[in-house]
Length: 229
Image (cartoon, rainbow, N blue to C red; front, side, top):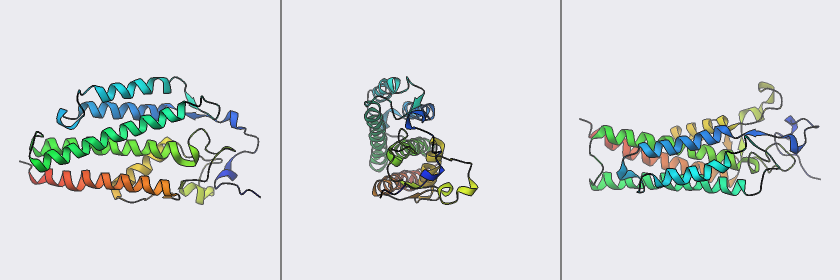
């Protein structure tokens, strides 16, 4: 006998998977914000030419944003392309972190002005938060196209509303902003504070985000404050 995934009890019995829709625009806006933050970074901290990474992001983002919603019957190529785009943005941000630390420790091309380092670290940290919120949003329960449908997997995150449904609106579902908050608090506290990771994948992603955030905030920002004039 198959067990019902946690949270499925909140779903109306008469709702078919074809009627399930998730707004795409919050994630698209988040990806666009990543491209803008990348453009603002100093040229020494990005992959040159500077326009290359944002241009490639936009090329992949345009077809993904053509439809307003994510749903179970969307084209099969959409989710692989979405994951590819998120992975691409992640690698670009990791490269920026590595370049920032490298130039800081080697006293290279990055200005030793503390304020410039703080601003650069803040932009990279913000991108880190957005990127992992997209990972959480795309991977939890098999992604936004299957979440809370008959096709969903077991949950990757345990939200407070799932433990105490009487404190949530009927048929509550996590939206993109819920995953953004999880990513923000994890990056700030270096540990989960709101939703608890349940699967190995979720724990691995939160660990990677914490490490990246720790490098950016503790190592880079702390060094920058020491050289403020």
